[in-house]
Every structure is written in C-alpha cells, then in structure tokens.
Length: 263
Image 1: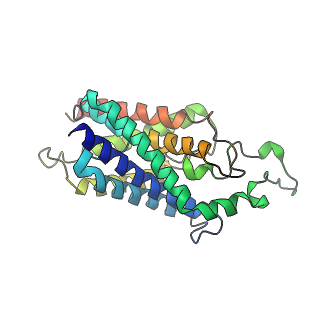
Image 2 (image 1 turned 90 degrees about the horizontal axis):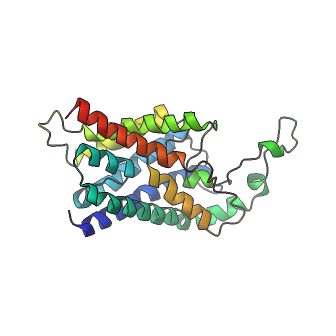
Image 3 (image 1 turned 90 degrees about the vertical axis):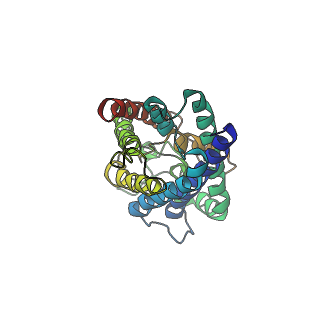
C-alpha cells in the first residue's frame, strides 16, 4: 500500500466510523432528537454498524485498521511495517476529528437546544430535591457524545477494563481466517469485527463506555474542547489518558499473544 492509500483509506474510514458512532450517541442523548433515550442497545449496535461501514469503505484501500490499537497489534504480529505505523496513527486521528465535526454539524440545532436548557446544563439535584454541587458532573453535559467516561472513576480498574476489552477486539481481528489456510476472511472480516464490537459493548462496555480505540476518544475530545458550544462544560482531560493508554497496551498484548499462541 502506498502512503496515499494509507492516508486516504484511514482518514475516510475513521471519519465515517466516528460520524456514525458519535451520531448514535448524539441521537440517544440530545433533546429534540427522535431517538432520545433509545438506550444502550441502540448505542452498541450503532457503534457496531459504524465499524462495519468504516471498515468496508477502507478495507480495499488501506486495510481498514481505523484504530491505533489494531495498527500496533498488526505491527507486532508482523502484518504491518513499523515504518507505516506513524502514518496510520496520524491519519486515524485526523479522520476521527473530521468525524466528530460532522456529528456536530449534523446535530447542530439539537446541540444548541440541549445546551441552552437549564434543566440539562444545571447541577444535579439530590434526593431531597436540592441542588447538590458536590454531585455536579466534572465533565460537560454532552461530552459523552464525543468521548468516553467511567461510571466509577477508579484509574486502575478503568485502565484494566480498557486493556481487557481491547485484547478481545484485536485478538479477534488477528485470528480471522486461521481456519481458512491463513488467507483471512476478506470483506466478511468487516462483519465479524463489527459483531465483535457489539459483543464487547454489551458485555464489557458498562464500566467505561468501551473506547477500545485511542483516536475514537482523543480525536473527538479535542474537537469537543475546540467547538463553540454554549455551556458545554469541561472535556475531562484528567481521564483522557486512560482510553488512549489502555487500548494501546491491549493492542500490544494481543499482538504478543497471537505470536505466542497462534503464529
């Protein structure tokens, strides 16, 4: 693959991945959206379809990594040249930022309606009905559309959760086609990967929101920080290292496990 193939495929594929994945989060979260409160099942299947679409679009151009953890795992496994890794990662981050901007443009009116509603942007109320400033969220009221966050903030547990979930994802990708003389699954692999992502979301996504992809979290979080949204709140940079480090570690572990157990 040429450098231009990698850049174009990873940028477009990751942009579509984030557009559709962030889009389902926006649809479920924002006021004046027809899908508001559709729930966790809608989010998990929406992200699965997002992976399917992005991977199908980019598969024939760049190999459709769309995820630095996958790129690292493939480099350790030997299927990707280490010299190509920086271009993959840079293209994925750029694409993720484009996708996040497209989510904002698509739901522009809903973002404004949501973020100018005092009931939405105000502090949480306690059981007695009084505003509890201590329980007010550190993150902004729409940050979950752009990036992930834990239900229980415990750095070690959150990091371990992301590592485990990413090992499952990357190992499932690396082992595709082992029962087919090692030739891979072709375009069918995108469907298998999408179903794995749905499974991870349903089974392992509850604690942290399952980033399992550093640029899926970092790119949109940067865009959230830059967007001119009223009353958007903070971008929770204190947590931001976990959905980056966890998937990268998980991808590296999966690559090593593949070489030990399957190569």
